[in-house]
Length: 427
Image (cartoon, rainbow, N blue to C red):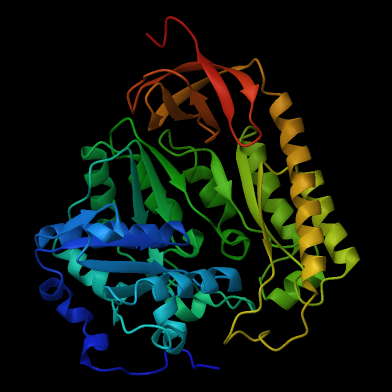
Protein backbone atom coordinates (compact mmCIF):
# COMPACT_ATOMS: atom_id res chain seq x y z
CA UNK A 1 0.00 0.00 0.00
CA UNK A 2 1.36 3.41 -0.90
CA UNK A 3 1.93 5.83 1.95
CA UNK A 4 0.02 9.06 2.36
CA UNK A 5 1.88 11.90 0.70
CA UNK A 6 4.39 9.36 -0.54
CA UNK A 7 7.06 9.75 -3.08
CA UNK A 8 9.09 12.86 -3.83
CA UNK A 9 9.45 12.81 -7.56
CA UNK A 10 11.71 14.66 -9.94
CA UNK A 11 11.73 18.44 -10.19
CA UNK A 12 8.89 18.42 -12.71
CA UNK A 13 6.59 16.77 -10.21
CA UNK A 14 7.45 19.18 -7.43
CA UNK A 15 7.20 22.04 -9.90
CA UNK A 16 3.79 23.52 -9.20
CA UNK A 17 5.64 26.75 -8.39
CA UNK A 18 6.51 26.81 -12.12
CA UNK A 19 2.87 26.57 -13.15
CA UNK A 20 2.65 30.08 -14.67
CA UNK A 21 5.66 29.52 -16.95
CA UNK A 22 4.79 25.94 -17.85
CA UNK A 23 1.23 26.80 -18.90
CA UNK A 24 1.69 30.34 -20.14
CA UNK A 25 0.01 31.23 -23.45
CA UNK A 26 -1.29 27.74 -24.22
CA UNK A 27 -4.64 25.99 -24.55
CA UNK A 28 -5.73 24.03 -21.49
CA UNK A 29 -8.48 21.48 -20.92
CA UNK A 30 -9.66 20.93 -17.33
CA UNK A 31 -11.71 18.08 -15.85
CA UNK A 32 -13.04 18.50 -12.31
CA UNK A 33 -14.47 15.84 -10.04
CA UNK A 34 -15.90 15.72 -6.54
CA UNK A 35 -17.31 18.37 -4.24
CA UNK A 36 -18.06 22.05 -4.73
CA UNK A 37 -14.76 22.86 -3.03
CA UNK A 38 -12.90 21.17 -5.88
CA UNK A 39 -14.93 23.17 -8.37
CA UNK A 40 -13.96 26.29 -6.42
CA UNK A 41 -10.29 25.38 -6.83
CA UNK A 42 -10.84 24.96 -10.56
CA UNK A 43 -12.55 28.35 -10.80
CA UNK A 44 -9.52 29.96 -9.15
CA UNK A 45 -7.15 28.03 -11.41
CA UNK A 46 -9.02 29.19 -14.52
CA UNK A 47 -8.57 32.81 -13.46
CA UNK A 48 -4.84 32.23 -12.88
CA UNK A 49 -4.47 30.61 -16.31
CA UNK A 50 -6.29 33.44 -18.04
CA UNK A 51 -4.09 35.95 -16.24
CA UNK A 52 -1.07 34.24 -17.80
CA UNK A 53 -2.51 34.29 -21.30
CA UNK A 54 -3.80 30.72 -21.42
CA UNK A 55 -7.07 29.69 -23.03
CA UNK A 56 -9.38 27.15 -21.41
CA UNK A 57 -10.90 24.88 -24.08
CA UNK A 58 -13.90 22.55 -24.03
CA UNK A 59 -12.33 19.38 -25.46
CA UNK A 60 -9.07 17.58 -24.63
CA UNK A 61 -8.27 17.18 -28.33
CA UNK A 62 -8.15 20.98 -28.60
CA UNK A 63 -5.69 21.32 -25.72
CA UNK A 64 -1.92 21.53 -25.48
CA UNK A 65 -2.18 20.64 -21.78
CA UNK A 66 -4.68 18.74 -19.63
CA UNK A 67 -5.41 19.34 -15.94
CA UNK A 68 -7.41 16.84 -13.87
CA UNK A 69 -8.77 18.02 -10.50
CA UNK A 70 -9.17 14.72 -8.68
CA UNK A 71 -11.46 13.25 -6.02
CA UNK A 72 -10.87 10.05 -4.05
CA UNK A 73 -13.70 10.05 -1.54
CA UNK A 74 -14.81 6.49 -2.40
CA UNK A 75 -13.19 3.57 -4.17
CA UNK A 76 -15.30 3.81 -7.34
CA UNK A 77 -14.28 7.46 -7.75
CA UNK A 78 -10.62 6.58 -7.27
CA UNK A 79 -10.82 3.94 -9.98
CA UNK A 80 -12.51 6.38 -12.33
CA UNK A 81 -9.78 8.94 -11.67
CA UNK A 82 -7.04 6.46 -12.50
CA UNK A 83 -8.79 5.48 -15.74
CA UNK A 84 -9.05 9.13 -16.77
CA UNK A 85 -5.41 9.79 -15.94
CA UNK A 86 -4.33 6.74 -17.94
CA UNK A 87 -6.30 8.07 -20.90
CA UNK A 88 -4.37 11.36 -20.75
CA UNK A 89 -0.89 9.86 -20.21
CA UNK A 90 0.27 10.97 -23.66
CA UNK A 91 -0.74 14.56 -22.98
CA UNK A 92 1.15 17.28 -21.11
CA UNK A 93 -0.71 16.27 -17.95
CA UNK A 94 -1.19 18.08 -14.63
CA UNK A 95 -2.97 16.67 -11.58
CA UNK A 96 -4.41 18.51 -8.58
CA UNK A 97 -7.16 17.91 -6.02
CA UNK A 98 -7.22 15.27 -3.29
CA UNK A 99 -5.42 12.31 -4.85
CA UNK A 100 -1.84 13.62 -5.05
CA UNK A 101 -1.52 14.05 -1.28
CA UNK A 102 -2.68 10.54 -0.41
CA UNK A 103 -2.29 8.36 -3.51
CA UNK A 104 0.66 9.75 -5.39
CA UNK A 105 2.22 6.35 -5.97
CA UNK A 106 -0.99 5.10 -7.58
CA UNK A 107 -0.96 8.10 -9.91
CA UNK A 108 2.67 7.67 -10.95
CA UNK A 109 2.15 3.97 -11.53
CA UNK A 110 0.05 4.82 -14.59
CA UNK A 111 1.31 8.24 -15.79
CA UNK A 112 3.92 10.93 -15.15
CA UNK A 113 2.08 14.19 -14.55
CA UNK A 114 3.10 17.43 -12.94
CA UNK A 115 1.45 17.81 -9.54
CA UNK A 116 -0.25 21.11 -8.78
CA UNK A 117 -0.80 21.66 -5.08
CA UNK A 118 -4.15 23.26 -4.19
CA UNK A 119 -2.13 25.56 -1.90
CA UNK A 120 -0.23 26.79 -4.94
CA UNK A 121 -3.51 27.52 -6.74
CA UNK A 122 -4.65 29.62 -3.79
CA UNK A 123 -1.32 31.44 -3.51
CA UNK A 124 -1.29 32.33 -7.20
CA UNK A 125 -4.95 33.31 -7.14
CA UNK A 126 -4.40 35.87 -4.38
CA UNK A 127 -2.27 37.92 -6.77
CA UNK A 128 -4.96 37.70 -9.47
CA UNK A 129 -8.21 38.01 -7.54
CA UNK A 130 -10.58 38.16 -10.51
CA UNK A 131 -13.78 36.14 -10.87
CA UNK A 132 -15.54 34.90 -13.97
CA UNK A 133 -18.88 36.31 -14.99
CA UNK A 134 -21.72 33.89 -14.42
CA UNK A 135 -24.89 33.30 -12.49
CA UNK A 136 -23.31 31.09 -9.79
CA UNK A 137 -20.22 31.89 -7.75
CA UNK A 138 -18.37 29.34 -5.57
CA UNK A 139 -16.70 30.89 -2.53
CA UNK A 140 -14.42 28.73 -0.40
CA UNK A 141 -14.40 29.37 3.35
CA UNK A 142 -11.75 26.93 4.54
CA UNK A 143 -9.58 23.99 3.62
CA UNK A 144 -9.44 20.86 5.77
CA UNK A 145 -11.53 20.14 8.84
CA UNK A 146 -11.14 19.53 12.59
CA UNK A 147 -12.93 16.17 12.44
CA UNK A 148 -11.64 12.67 13.07
CA UNK A 149 -14.07 10.54 11.08
CA UNK A 150 -12.72 7.00 10.96
CA UNK A 151 -13.72 6.37 7.34
CA UNK A 152 -12.66 9.63 5.67
CA UNK A 153 -9.63 9.91 3.41
CA UNK A 154 -10.36 13.54 2.53
CA UNK A 155 -9.14 14.79 5.91
CA UNK A 156 -5.72 13.28 5.12
CA UNK A 157 -5.76 14.78 1.64
CA UNK A 158 -6.76 18.28 2.77
CA UNK A 159 -5.14 18.38 6.18
CA UNK A 160 -6.16 20.29 9.30
CA UNK A 161 -8.60 23.19 9.27
CA UNK A 162 -7.25 26.37 7.69
CA UNK A 163 -9.87 29.10 7.55
CA UNK A 164 -9.71 31.75 4.84
CA UNK A 165 -9.72 35.27 6.34
CA UNK A 166 -13.11 36.96 6.50
CA UNK A 167 -12.01 40.02 4.52
CA UNK A 168 -10.83 37.79 1.67
CA UNK A 169 -14.17 35.94 1.63
CA UNK A 170 -16.15 39.19 1.70
CA UNK A 171 -14.10 40.62 -1.18
CA UNK A 172 -14.72 37.54 -3.29
CA UNK A 173 -18.47 37.55 -2.65
CA UNK A 174 -18.60 41.22 -3.62
CA UNK A 175 -16.62 40.45 -6.78
CA UNK A 176 -19.03 37.68 -7.78
CA UNK A 177 -22.07 39.89 -7.15
CA UNK A 178 -20.51 42.68 -9.22
CA UNK A 179 -19.80 40.12 -11.99
CA UNK A 180 -23.47 39.13 -12.09
CA UNK A 181 -23.75 36.11 -9.80
CA UNK A 182 -27.18 35.56 -8.27
CA UNK A 183 -26.34 32.43 -6.31
CA UNK A 184 -23.31 32.41 -4.04
CA UNK A 185 -22.35 28.92 -2.85
CA UNK A 186 -20.29 28.88 0.35
CA UNK A 187 -18.21 25.71 0.49
CA UNK A 188 -15.65 23.90 2.65
CA UNK A 189 -15.07 20.37 3.89
CA UNK A 190 -17.14 21.55 6.88
CA UNK A 191 -18.57 25.05 6.52
CA UNK A 192 -19.61 25.28 10.17
CA UNK A 193 -16.02 24.74 11.32
CA UNK A 194 -14.97 28.03 9.72
CA UNK A 195 -13.20 30.23 12.27
CA UNK A 196 -12.58 27.50 14.85
CA UNK A 197 -8.83 27.81 14.19
CA UNK A 198 -8.79 31.62 14.23
CA UNK A 199 -11.36 32.50 16.89
CA UNK A 200 -13.80 33.84 14.31
CA UNK A 201 -17.54 33.17 14.12
CA UNK A 202 -19.41 31.75 11.14
CA UNK A 203 -22.60 33.46 12.27
CA UNK A 204 -20.83 36.85 12.28
CA UNK A 205 -19.41 36.11 8.82
CA UNK A 206 -22.90 35.30 7.49
CA UNK A 207 -24.24 38.56 8.92
CA UNK A 208 -21.41 40.45 7.19
CA UNK A 209 -22.07 38.69 3.88
CA UNK A 210 -25.78 39.42 4.17
CA UNK A 211 -24.99 43.13 4.34
CA UNK A 212 -23.55 43.05 0.81
CA UNK A 213 -26.13 44.76 -1.37
CA UNK A 214 -27.53 43.08 -4.46
CA UNK A 215 -30.18 40.73 -5.76
CA UNK A 216 -28.10 37.65 -4.95
CA UNK A 217 -28.79 34.78 -2.55
CA UNK A 218 -26.30 32.80 -0.46
CA UNK A 219 -26.40 29.01 -0.09
CA UNK A 220 -24.57 27.80 2.98
CA UNK A 221 -22.83 24.52 2.18
CA UNK A 222 -22.38 21.29 4.10
CA UNK A 223 -22.15 21.67 7.88
CA UNK A 224 -21.15 18.85 10.23
CA UNK A 225 -23.65 18.44 13.10
CA UNK A 226 -20.64 18.07 15.43
CA UNK A 227 -19.57 21.66 14.77
CA UNK A 228 -23.09 23.03 14.37
CA UNK A 229 -24.29 21.83 17.79
CA UNK A 230 -21.96 24.21 19.64
CA UNK A 231 -23.29 27.28 17.78
CA UNK A 232 -26.83 26.38 16.74
CA UNK A 233 -28.53 29.42 18.24
CA UNK A 234 -26.12 31.91 16.67
CA UNK A 235 -26.41 30.22 13.28
CA UNK A 236 -30.21 30.25 13.43
CA UNK A 237 -30.10 34.00 14.07
CA UNK A 238 -27.66 34.53 11.18
CA UNK A 239 -29.92 32.61 8.78
CA UNK A 240 -32.53 35.35 9.22
CA UNK A 241 -30.65 37.46 6.67
CA UNK A 242 -32.68 38.25 3.56
CA UNK A 243 -29.86 37.06 1.29
CA UNK A 244 -29.49 33.68 3.02
CA UNK A 245 -31.34 30.70 1.54
CA UNK A 246 -33.30 28.88 4.23
CA UNK A 247 -31.48 25.66 3.42
CA UNK A 248 -29.18 23.51 5.54
CA UNK A 249 -27.13 20.50 4.51
CA UNK A 250 -26.42 18.43 7.64
CA UNK A 251 -24.86 15.03 6.84
CA UNK A 252 -26.06 12.72 9.62
CA UNK A 253 -24.54 9.61 7.95
CA UNK A 254 -26.45 7.13 10.15
CA UNK A 255 -29.52 6.88 12.34
CA UNK A 256 -27.71 4.60 14.79
CA UNK A 257 -25.70 5.99 17.71
CA UNK A 258 -23.47 2.93 17.77
CA UNK A 259 -22.57 3.43 14.10
CA UNK A 260 -22.02 7.15 14.63
CA UNK A 261 -19.64 6.33 17.48
CA UNK A 262 -17.65 3.93 15.26
CA UNK A 263 -17.61 6.60 12.56
CA UNK A 264 -16.14 9.12 15.01
CA UNK A 265 -18.74 11.70 14.04
CA UNK A 266 -18.90 13.48 17.39
CA UNK A 267 -22.66 13.73 17.88
CA UNK A 268 -25.66 11.53 18.58
CA UNK A 269 -28.89 11.06 16.64
CA UNK A 270 -30.77 13.04 19.28
CA UNK A 271 -28.32 15.94 18.89
CA UNK A 272 -28.85 15.90 15.13
CA UNK A 273 -32.62 15.90 15.61
CA UNK A 274 -32.36 18.76 18.11
CA UNK A 275 -30.48 20.88 15.54
CA UNK A 276 -33.10 20.16 12.88
CA UNK A 277 -35.93 20.88 15.29
CA UNK A 278 -34.36 24.18 16.37
CA UNK A 279 -33.98 25.40 12.78
CA UNK A 280 -37.52 24.33 11.92
CA UNK A 281 -38.96 26.13 14.93
CA UNK A 282 -37.51 29.39 13.59
CA UNK A 283 -37.96 28.60 9.88
CA UNK A 284 -40.85 26.13 9.45
CA UNK A 285 -40.36 25.85 5.68
CA UNK A 286 -36.59 25.35 5.78
CA UNK A 287 -35.14 22.69 3.47
CA UNK A 288 -33.10 20.06 5.32
CA UNK A 289 -30.75 17.91 3.25
CA UNK A 290 -28.54 15.15 4.60
CA UNK A 291 -26.10 12.40 3.64
CA UNK A 292 -26.30 8.73 4.62
CA UNK A 293 -23.69 5.98 4.41
CA UNK A 294 -25.10 2.47 4.04
CA UNK A 295 -23.28 -0.78 4.67
CA UNK A 296 -20.77 0.75 7.06
CA UNK A 297 -18.50 -1.89 8.55
CA UNK A 298 -20.37 -3.46 11.45
CA UNK A 299 -23.70 -1.92 10.46
CA UNK A 300 -26.47 -4.36 11.44
CA UNK A 301 -30.00 -4.64 10.13
CA UNK A 302 -31.14 -2.83 13.29
CA UNK A 303 -28.67 0.01 12.59
CA UNK A 304 -29.90 0.27 9.02
CA UNK A 305 -33.53 0.28 10.16
CA UNK A 306 -32.71 3.15 12.53
CA UNK A 307 -31.41 5.16 9.56
CA UNK A 308 -34.59 4.46 7.59
CA UNK A 309 -36.66 5.48 10.60
CA UNK A 310 -34.76 8.76 10.92
CA UNK A 311 -35.43 9.69 7.29
CA UNK A 312 -39.12 9.00 7.69
CA UNK A 313 -39.54 10.68 11.08
CA UNK A 314 -37.61 13.83 10.19
CA UNK A 315 -39.13 14.05 6.68
CA UNK A 316 -35.78 15.02 5.19
CA UNK A 317 -36.04 16.94 1.92
CA UNK A 318 -32.96 15.41 0.28
CA UNK A 319 -30.93 12.34 1.17
CA UNK A 320 -27.63 11.65 -0.59
CA UNK A 321 -27.00 7.91 -0.21
CA UNK A 322 -23.47 6.50 -0.45
CA UNK A 323 -22.36 2.91 -0.09
CA UNK A 324 -19.55 2.58 2.43
CA UNK A 325 -16.16 2.26 0.81
CA UNK A 326 -13.02 1.34 2.73
CA UNK A 327 -10.33 3.93 2.08
CA UNK A 328 -6.57 3.59 2.55
CA UNK A 329 -4.89 5.33 5.51
CA UNK A 330 -8.11 5.44 7.53
CA UNK A 331 -8.45 3.67 10.91
CA UNK A 332 -11.01 1.26 9.43
CA UNK A 333 -9.04 0.39 6.30
CA UNK A 334 -8.50 -3.21 7.42
CA UNK A 335 -11.82 -3.78 9.21
CA UNK A 336 -14.17 -6.46 7.93
CA UNK A 337 -16.61 -4.95 5.44
CA UNK A 338 -20.22 -5.70 4.59
CA UNK A 339 -20.66 -7.66 1.33
CA UNK A 340 -21.35 -5.61 -1.78
CA UNK A 341 -24.79 -7.16 -2.24
CA UNK A 342 -25.78 -5.95 1.25
CA UNK A 343 -24.63 -2.42 0.43
CA UNK A 344 -26.50 -2.46 -2.87
CA UNK A 345 -29.71 -3.72 -1.29
CA UNK A 346 -29.57 -1.16 1.51
CA UNK A 347 -28.77 1.64 -0.93
CA UNK A 348 -31.73 0.68 -3.10
CA UNK A 349 -34.09 0.47 -0.13
CA UNK A 350 -32.95 3.77 1.36
CA UNK A 351 -33.26 5.64 -1.93
CA UNK A 352 -36.78 4.25 -2.37
CA UNK A 353 -37.78 5.33 1.14
CA UNK A 354 -36.29 8.78 0.64
CA UNK A 355 -38.23 9.20 -2.61
CA UNK A 356 -41.43 8.23 -0.83
CA UNK A 357 -40.76 11.06 1.60
CA UNK A 358 -40.12 13.48 -1.28
CA UNK A 359 -43.44 12.49 -2.84
CA UNK A 360 -45.30 13.20 0.39
CA UNK A 361 -43.56 16.54 0.94
CA UNK A 362 -43.93 17.64 -2.67
CA UNK A 363 -47.62 16.77 -2.86
CA UNK A 364 -48.25 19.34 -0.16
CA UNK A 365 -46.68 22.02 -2.36
CA UNK A 366 -48.50 21.43 -5.65
CA UNK A 367 -50.73 24.38 -6.50
CA UNK A 368 -49.03 26.75 -4.06
CA UNK A 369 -47.74 30.15 -5.16
CA UNK A 370 -44.24 30.99 -3.91
CA UNK A 371 -41.60 33.64 -4.62
CA UNK A 372 -38.54 32.81 -6.71
CA UNK A 373 -35.37 34.18 -8.24
CA UNK A 374 -33.85 32.82 -11.47
CA UNK A 375 -30.32 31.56 -10.80
CA UNK A 376 -29.43 29.68 -13.98
CA UNK A 377 -30.30 29.45 -17.69
CA UNK A 378 -30.75 25.75 -18.48
CA UNK A 379 -31.34 26.18 -22.21
CA UNK A 380 -33.37 28.38 -24.50
CA UNK A 381 -36.88 28.66 -23.11
CA UNK A 382 -36.05 27.02 -19.75
CA UNK A 383 -34.55 28.40 -16.54
CA UNK A 384 -33.78 27.13 -13.04
CA UNK A 385 -35.30 29.24 -10.29
CA UNK A 386 -34.97 28.92 -6.54
CA UNK A 387 -37.45 29.63 -3.78
CA UNK A 388 -36.28 31.25 -0.52
CA UNK A 389 -35.88 27.67 0.78
CA UNK A 390 -33.73 26.70 -2.23
CA UNK A 391 -36.47 24.59 -3.81
CA UNK A 392 -35.57 23.95 -7.44
CA UNK A 393 -38.21 25.17 -9.89
CA UNK A 394 -37.91 24.80 -13.65
CA UNK A 395 -39.80 27.57 -15.45
CA UNK A 396 -40.25 27.07 -19.18
CA UNK A 397 -39.85 30.68 -20.22
CA UNK A 398 -37.04 32.90 -21.40
CA UNK A 399 -36.40 34.78 -18.17
CA UNK A 400 -33.11 36.53 -17.37
CA UNK A 401 -30.88 35.43 -14.51
CA UNK A 402 -31.74 37.47 -11.44
CA UNK A 403 -35.38 37.86 -12.43
CA UNK A 404 -37.68 37.46 -9.45
CA UNK A 405 -41.42 37.04 -9.11
CA UNK A 406 -44.04 34.52 -8.06
CA UNK A 407 -44.60 31.04 -9.45
CA UNK A 408 -47.29 28.39 -9.10
CA UNK A 409 -45.90 24.88 -8.55
CA UNK A 410 -47.67 22.78 -11.18
CA UNK A 411 -45.83 19.47 -11.47
CA UNK A 412 -43.72 17.37 -9.12
CA UNK A 413 -40.51 16.03 -10.67
CA UNK A 414 -39.34 14.47 -7.38
CA UNK A 415 -36.13 16.49 -7.17
CA UNK A 416 -37.58 19.73 -8.50
CA UNK A 417 -40.87 21.26 -9.62
CA UNK A 418 -42.22 22.56 -12.90
CA UNK A 419 -43.57 26.03 -12.22
CA UNK A 420 -45.76 28.54 -14.02
CA UNK A 421 -45.17 32.25 -13.61
CA UNK A 422 -47.96 34.25 -12.03
CA UNK A 423 -49.08 37.18 -14.13
CA UNK A 424 -48.53 40.10 -14.10
CA UNK A 425 -45.53 39.74 -11.80
CA UNK A 426 -43.55 37.78 -14.41
CA UNK A 427 -43.99 40.21 -17.25
